[in-house]
Image (cartoon, rainbow, N blue to C red):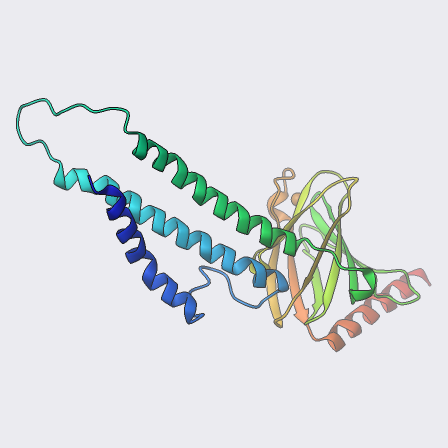
Length: 255
Ligand SMILES: [Cu+2]
């Protein structure tokens, strides 16, 4: 049997076009856009790499299945020779999956530790509290100057909008009022849980102007599907104008 040789050559064959794609930096985002947020910068290549790995493993597996189907068909009525205990093959099919998992694990841990990194307060431009509750979101902007915060509270009927200043690092403090929720902005490749009694911290920069859908991605009760919000990335000036508007509204409500 020349299986190991077959594996190597087929593996190289399958990966070659993908690798050349990587070199040109034109490989498809496979559903995600590059450069939308500082998280995409870390996650996108992990996402692509996982798909390439899956494609290579899938092609090799398919060939290993089809090989006996085509080349080892029943030839006559004699019972085929029975073999057992092929140590090299058994070691190989234990070691290879282990290596695949170890490599994926390494890159996942590496990227995750970059994504969840929290910088000192002095390096953060804006602070926003995100509170999940059954069944909507509350955003508290801590940029409201002498006013402690400007607050926006959504309802299932009127989902709130989260304003983010383009190119500015924002620290999010994630909390929940009742049960566990999940703060998820799919296009930004970001999700982190809102836990009652625990404050999760997340930091990222939104880099491209636009409007993006946000959702709760932890099943949190009857109206979970209505826990929607919109992310609006605007210029710093528009962001500041928006916050001032919120502060003015709150001051008017108190007076
Ligand atoms: Cu929820």
